Amino acid sequence: MTLSEKSQREIRKIAYAIWMQEGQPEGRDKEHWEAAKEIWAFRSHNHALPDEEDDSKPARSGGGERRQPTHSRPM
Image (cartoon, rainbow, N blue to C red; front, side, top):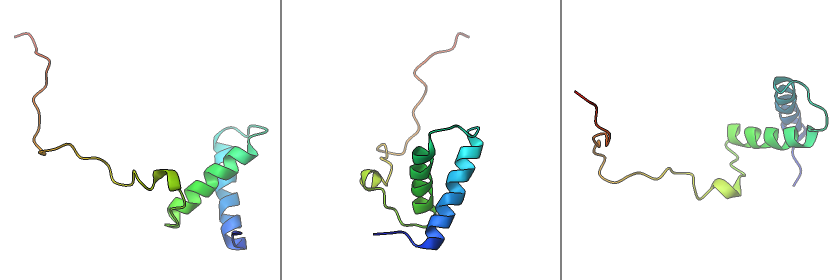
């Protein structure tokens, strides 16, 4: 499946911003492109990140009660 031209333009802009933010390093274009694709997918609600689908909801600790700190302060 190929991305539309509009999607590729958006991803290119994101990748460029990443490149600029990281100080314009050479040889990291593929890394920036892949990071930009992930950001674009998240922003467009096209959650194409299969590794994170199972972890989409954070685990909750039981009870919802606040625990007291375990350390003691000298008085």
